Image (tube, rainbow, N blue to C red; front, side):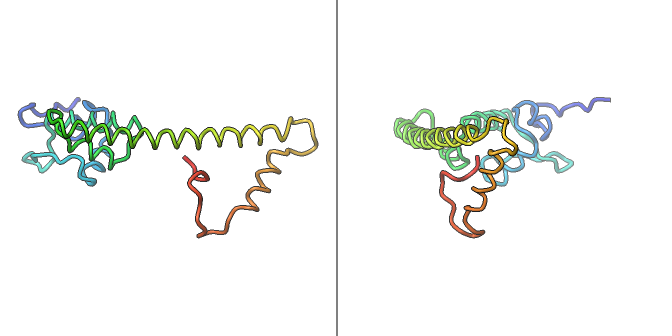
Length: 157
């Protein structure tokens, strides 16, 4: 038997808000913890209730996250007023900064692609041993000890 959603004037429970926004209930709770969303009401049973505005906000967050924006970048954009000229300038600054991050990541990915191609070229599969695995073991031996600083380019996505 399907459980009915509460009337819209009361709000949506988290599962309904998740279904309407495309954001999982787990992520909704996380965004609440991070202060990106705060449901305005609770039902008689103490369940959080979400409004249509909350669902829209969740969709906005999901869209920004799909563009690989950090929570801080999303928080900045959520704090802006779409009718304010000053906030339009702030939105441009925020997007320009994010675009800079994306371009840096693209440079990192191009470098990674070259490394992977060089690694792949180590072995054609015809020798007695795999030179790819051999090269990976050699690189692992050259890795810094635990606790040493990692470079930004060496991080895993």
